[in-house]
Length: 314
Image 1 (cartoon, rainbow, N blue to C red):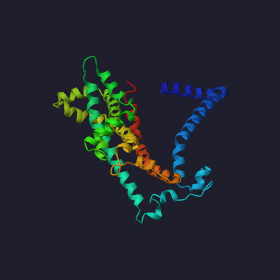
Image 2 (cartoon, one colour):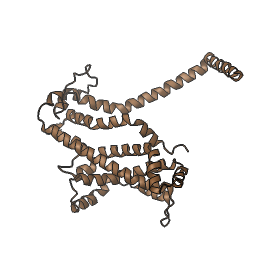
Image 3 (cartoon, rainbow, N blue to C red):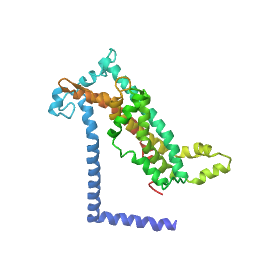
Image 4 (cartoon, one colour):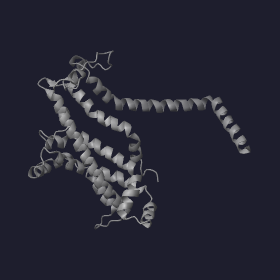
């Protein structure tokens, strides 16, 4: 009790002294205003493109060209953009070929993104566990060199691989197929999955696996029963990043598909007419395309933060 009696008055006196110091209070206030002002400005810069896309989907041609931004103030919202895709409320009970096309492209994007992300996480987790727990020697290469080699695959411009993959896929009859895009997207996001999972495994003490081995577990059972559950946040973060990259990929989807396996990014880019770009249709389609990613980011934010910060503090 005496310790509490000594601490509480000193804290109260410190607060009172800080409150009586106008210069210190002004510095703290200015600092907070600058910090929160910068955060608000950055949030506005990041969210404005999404706001512009969503509002444009409810505009007419005149409102788009005149740059009206605020609904019900600068312009009256209209379902024209969504109606052109068969996605407006008054079109749900009608047959729409455009809506059917959208649903096919949406299905392709979901299947390809989920398949590639799952395959990348499955392969990447095994590779990352090996790089985290074992020491490899391949000539002059060591673990760090092998890890950098995986990451260096992201440096290569996609256009360099266009002709080789086009010839290879034609020979293997993989053009315009979902499995072809899944295999290609897996190679694309595999380096990211390996790096995130390797950092995640590095934070897990090896004592846990050694204790499991003593209790009778094999290396594989210790990996699946002990390590993977602990590394779940990193796996979810790697899966989400891989899913987003696969979902937004356009170049190879446009190059290697023609009819059956086209994805949403290809459909978004095709919203042009004889008189130019149909901004309202493109905005409506873009809004529908980014909505699943926004929901994933909102509901799985904590896993993303945990996974990306793994290994930052030792």
